[in-house]
Amino acid sequence: HRVDSHLLVGFYPHAARTTAFPMLEVQFDSMIGRRFEQEFETIWKHALIVDLVPYKPLRPAGDEALEAEALSPRELEILMLIEDGLSNHDIAERLVVSLATVKKHINNLYSKLGVSSRTQAILRAHQLHLL
Image (spheres, rainbow, N blue to C red):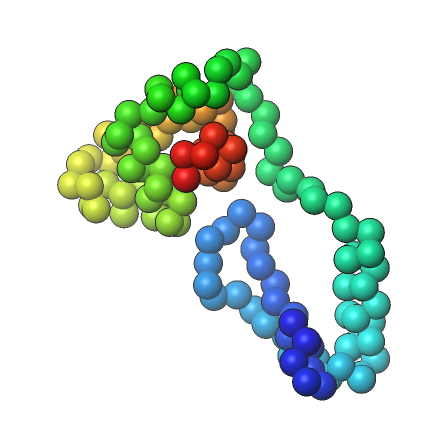
């Protein structure tokens, strides 16, 4: 972000949901400030949308509507909690179920969505308009 004569540069961890991240404040007209500005200009001029976590199905994708309907209400609820950044332990506490139950639902969810990680599950759910 450019604010008056300063640049604020944030460092976001990939695939992490967080509101706390390091920030660097740089004087815009300093050597490093000009370098940041040049780099950002280059990035924006040549920018392409890049999916940093590409969808790679574990099984062939079928009818998306059929896949979306295959999620149970509980699986959808857990998916939303995953998107909110909750750990398995936190999800178990919130839903008053065992950790093993949460893990079983997540494994079923991964299988139905054809993914192998939380990030891929969230991405796929957005592709299917579930979230």
